[in-house]
Amino acid sequence: MAVKKLVCANYLRDVPADTIAANEQNRCYVDRFVSENYKRLSAKFSNLDGVINSSGFGAMDKLNETIVSLYTDPELSFSNWEEAERYMSNKFTEKAIRVPVKKPTVKDGADEEEGE
Image (tube, rainbow, N blue to C red; front, side, top):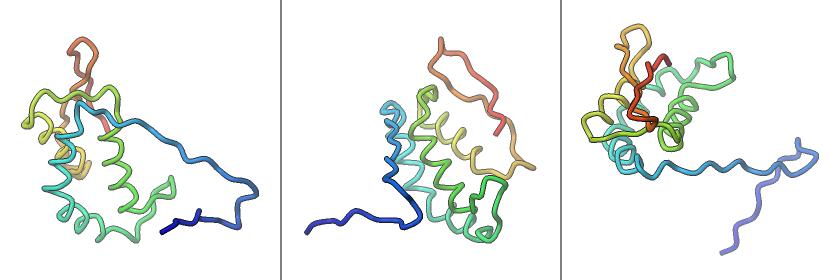
């Protein structure tokens, strides 16, 4: 079965899709987190779906954008499942009650404060 290219009449020309390579070192951790938590997170975020942020994203857009960023962040480096789960769970906690967790990075084993 052939797949037809999607066409948007609002574009005057083809716009190439941006591709970003996944951080293979973290893929198994992110896969596990998403498979264990996506239904819960999507239910939580879908309750807020009517709210649009200043960037024009809805809650589900932000959820999926954050998941993609976990897959593609080249500086993110988890050393074990506990560290990965703690960091990713924190990413999806409301800012008002979020406890800062250091971002595990590749650079010399140095950590950065996660402020998002």
